Image (cartoon, rainbow, N blue to C red; front, side, top):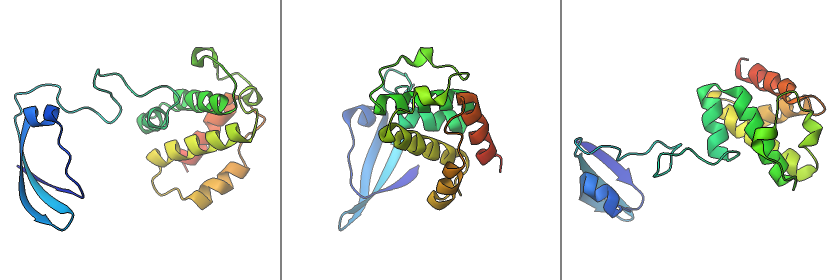
Length: 163
């Protein structure tokens, strides 16, 4: 038995078929819910990186980049981060064409692409280094290899993660 605290209560019929939830107590806008799970049901709970069909998040999304960093797949995380940057720079590109040997300038075409890259890398690296503050990130960002290759960015990210 688990007791879960919600600020609001939303239970879909899909979840109700998998478990039995009972509101034990309510206080203002907070409810205490008792959940009894039927463990004989399979594939009920999705990982935060999967949709209902079992697919992961879209390539170049914050969820995907964060999951790649969390799993330690920094090469793929950097490629997806640059894919996101290219999309924000209005550069139409196929993610499969991005290589670590590419110059980062191919994908960093305007201020929006730089901002998207910074946000993606910061949130991804923060999954590995939860103590990384925005101020620390800004200091690292100033020393980032803006004119290097994507492999230089991988090394940059690994340096921050392993500090």
